Length: 371
Image (cartoon, rainbow, N blue to C red; front, top):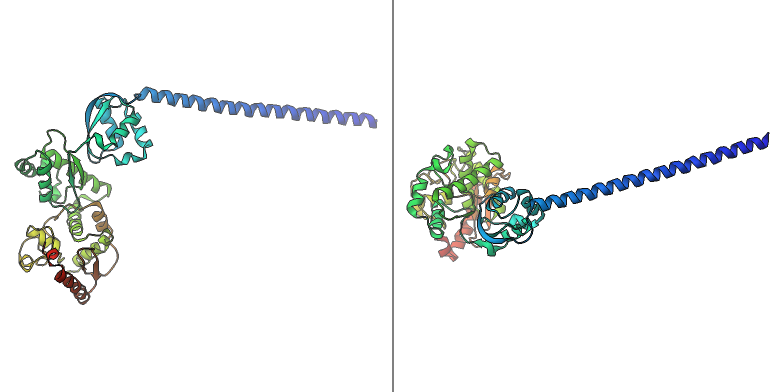
């Protein structure tokens, strides 16, 4: 009986071992099957992607030539659609793929480019990054420039006449200028480089600049009824500050003065930049005659904000005006026009001490203070 039980146990052990081996083999076969399936799926996906890329993209550097204009603010998809229409690339999808794969693509400048027809998307991106392919037909608006300075630039670098510019500026509705601007274009021209296409019109050029400004304010979620006031403040900030790190502090000075009409500064901004704008100057220190000139931009004479913006503020000035620094300052003065060093003060006594430093600078550098 005992030997039979031993034999029976041995048989059971052998049977269990056999089933373990079977299960192991089955598991291995399943794993191999899954791996094979994954490899097959990956291969077919790569093959599919490769085939898709071949279908939606041209091969090679292309042939012939055409001209395509890239405007300020256009995205990769905007440029891609334009290139497809011109016959440069085969599909917007292929161009976007190449655009996103090239880390330098964000450096593509507005301008008119000479490109080949039926180029690969990668070659098209490379061609747009090559300055040799770009025609020099650009009007650049710099932060802090006045409308008069922008107009002068337009008439210098394009074939647009002063008469055409004046005609365009007389119909601000056609330019897309918001009603809140009160018909004044100053401040609403977004800084940037704007491509001048063949047969460009002043109306189209100004419309681009205004549309770019509206887009900026939309992206910053500035309410429409607050935009003109913001641009007035930011334009003053732009003209007053030479070093960006000072922007939030000067923004606070502006807000502190406006918020306290019964305080030490009686609600007057007393900004040299507005006084200079009112008398047609763009730099230097106001003279006694300038300060006495009674016009809507003289913030030494009139409390509150001036009648309109005094320049085209950059995005940094706008953002600083939206988020001023915290502080008690009512005064600031740039004590060195070479370095831009600026001092801030909460009281008139402190400010007078700082201003004495500017007076000493001007005594030693008179021509720079008289510009």
